[in-house]
Image (cartoon, rainbow, N blue to C red; front, side, top):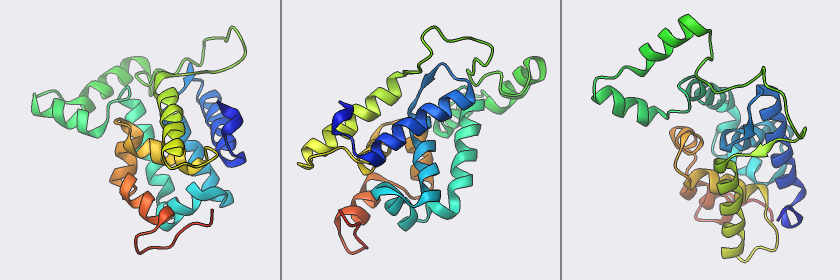
Length: 191
């Protein structure tokens, strides 16, 4: 599948692997793909970087990283999940505080920094696999010859979960990315 990926899309995948390694997590997940896209903003590389910058995320990248970190501390629960639980009388913040008081900050994050690796390679979690498969489907549906970083961004915006919710909270939706990349009154990225 990766033979159809552009250089920028491959850079996102490799960056996601690096983020997973840096976090000591067991697998590459959707949030790592988003973190890798944000890292490319610094280099202003690719169509996804263009779209994210056009939508103002270059200035709000730290807020996005912080929101992802907070979700990780909540064991991957999105803000919507936490609010739904609050409606049932369950205070996720209190639970996280109590667990971290006993087990240390980040105890619920799922990071396994003390675990070794059998193969030396990171596996891709279900979320990351779904994003990459969806990116391929988006590219095929658009009749694009290659899967680019913009397809990964589009896939992140439509898959339910923390990365999509965080992007939407910062004004990055499927519709807004499509408008920036492919027209509809705003600037279009060079293809």
